[in-house]
Length: 146
Image (cartoon, rainbow, N blue to C red; front, side):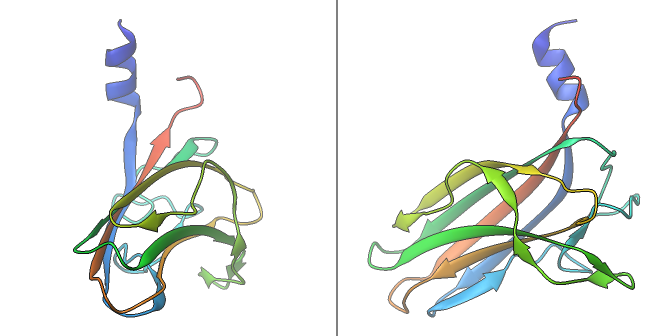
């Protein structure tokens, strides 16, 4: 089996969503109901689709802007569970750059999943109201064996 076959069969989408910003704001990506991803609740529906304990988690973000005035940046948070809802979010442990910039931007980061913090929240920030920015996000699960 080739590496391409292994990756194609092992890589899976945990969740995907978008957010549109036209003002100075920080907004969470809408992954559906609930808006955040609970990796502890594996279901046949997103968010949380097909996550397997010990998968590596990769977040892919793309921001498309209709201008070059406003700065866009990204953040990934994790949180504990609070009776089935997201608890207190804090900055997740990631590798990669989320700082962003002006115009269209992208980021790809790995997230270290912590056993006591199964919730993930992905956010985008715009610093102004001159540009309209649409952010798309895909959260991928990568099996440990790949």
